[in-house]
Image (cartoon, rainbow, N blue to C red; front, side):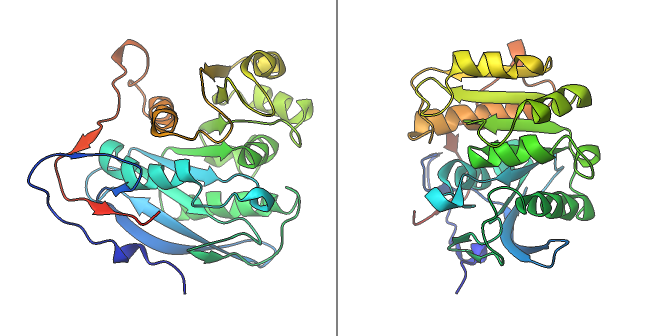
Length: 268
């Protein structure tokens, strides 16, 4: 039985609530299904702002499923809990082919990043068909490979503004893909943990040097999995800074760490 996001129970505390890992803020959440062009059904969830304008859309690509990555990987789960309410951002999460989570298991089998091209295309098409604006790919680890390999080529490139990469290993993605991004001119923000197991900031700056518009941001003390609220919060702030014009630089403000409205608690 798949998890139903409508099962969250919201209550109104008497005082502002600190936002913690399991804090769920109000949003319009629904289970969704994506259909790939080769016939697979992928399961996911779409979280939309409860009211008001949708300012941006995150199409999230999760870490390696053979090593525990799925749509509920913690940074993406926290994005869906917080960003619709705090920033007016829609968050689309889904399991790539053959990947399972409490939401359910997507059809197909893991294809080493090759067949997953059609998963990326299906997710972007879903967002376009729903009329979700200002669409950005957000890849984490294996998900960065998918973003780099397929985000700057059609049919995806015409439908996304750019990409944000978390802990890119640059294993499957090559200089050929980086040069495609360079030619596209689309923004590429690269968050690299200081203590990453695969690619650390100095090497990342060198590798991404072939993409003039790429911005490599080293994050002191962070590791590949961004464990800890300090680092997850940093990632969410960096994402919002990138996708919402006018929020970066001197005008940047941190996302709130308290919420005065209704809240629910996730069992994580």
